[in-house]
Image (cartoon, rainbow, N blue to C red):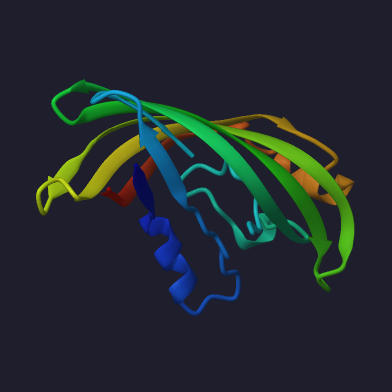
Length: 167
């Protein structure tokens, strides 16, 4: 059994006019020594690094709550690949935090990384690189869709730094 998360959650600790309010908890079960099952944004997800402009923000924000499933395969020593898919129920809010409408997003990730283990393999840290892809993103308000349509529905490369505990 394992429990983990991502260091991206530390962004919640910083003063920001657009906090991510992002939380991720992974609970997993090691099938074999190599196979593991695990499981608020203000702008389009596909904006390439260095291309963001304040004017490209949504006219409000998206609150998303979801559950996902992941499969990780250790390939060589602690090098791994992981694929996961998360279904999100999304709520679109205007600039006054009033709900405009609801939608659905299917968010997928293909990740490659390496697991470093510490303290008799109890604690682990996993730096990685990923490609994210959201083939389904429904019911965006028209004003949100205009901003979303400016970019692809994938993001590459997305750095990751996950951590966890093996029990």
